[in-house]
Length: 174
Ligand SMILES: [Cu+2]
Image 1 (cartoon, helix red, strand yellow):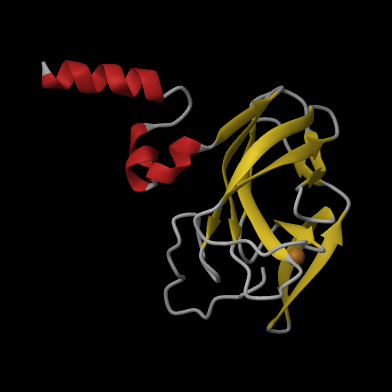
Image 2 (tube, rainbow, N blue to C red; image 1 turned 90 degrees about the horizontal axis):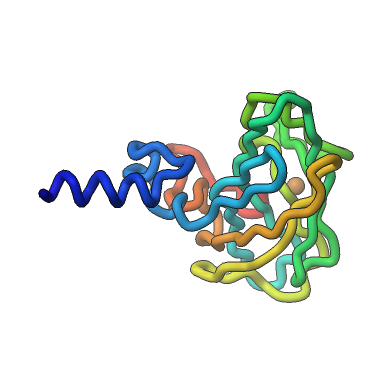
């Protein structure tokens, strides 16, 4: 009986998420958005230290369609602009630059995460506080605009559930 109930719950909750992923990261179930053939999972942002004017946003995009699409930007009410950034290591120095678009190939997933591709919230009008949720949008070249909700993780968090990176200093901004 118990197994049957559990199976029903899994069937209800598990449209796209496999059970192991849910077990590892319960927060992931709270935020899945879809637009066209794209699935956006687990958007999160980092809380900002006092007075900071920029913050990083992270999420995973999967393209279930048969044609590529490109993330070109987004909106966030508390930010003057949302840019797509790429971070890379050159000569032991982390650099980041704005890119016009981030391609998501058909059948592929792209993860925006600390140390790699990310969204950059520019000209913040107010700070982001850990535990907050913030509504915004993403804009794709073909699929168009989609509403998403970011969970704000603590300052310097390395992931949506707020865990710090092992043995590495956190980059407070990105
Ligand atoms: Cu950046």
